[in-house]
Length: 89
Image (cartoon, rainbow, N blue to C red; front, side, top):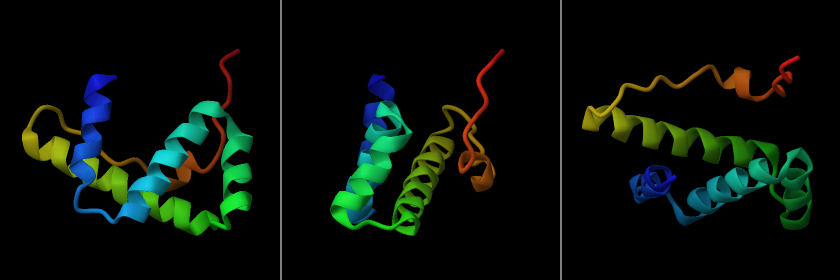
């Protein structure tokens, strides 16, 4: 968990709005699927803005982690994350 929180320092080059949107996306995913839709409706944020923030921040984190040589991470196909995962039987 501490390592994951430290990764937010890798987002210094991103704009404040992108960082905040990414943080909200993370919190809403932890709460459940409906939380993001509620936040978007309340704040007038479109799906494209959230997807853009997510992609930029994930790419920045992956790039920095790969550059440090600690581990190699590949960015998965974006379409994979747009569909809900099935529960294990």
